[in-house]
Image (cartoon, one colour):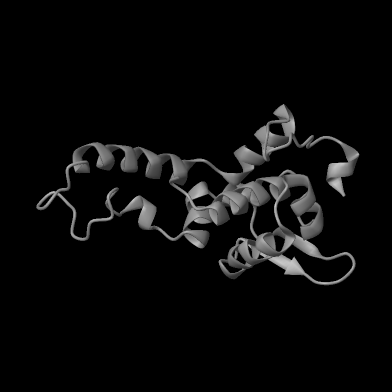
Length: 155
């Protein structure tokens, strides 16, 4: 798997939150239930997005998480970097230190092309576009289908 489970959950949660009104705090419990993610695991992942300044959190009965910046100013790269770091965009596919043009691994010429395309996509796809697609097309975010338009999922 290219991205860690933490990163995938963080991206799913960020998309879920971005599909809501800006400045609306979404309960972490609601996100966890809707996306079938462990509450405690999700809390730790969302802390990373909060520390990176992408989300803000608010404690209390009406608390939860909200985007700290506009969704058009957050790209997939930002989410990945906040949770997994940037190594996926720079490191050798085989994990060999020093892999590069001077000392390539057997997969280098193929991996560098994939890595460059992945980086370009991650830097161009905005959270806003992902949230809009999730909301408009009712696309799948979790193992069970989440209806982004249903009143229950907007709690």
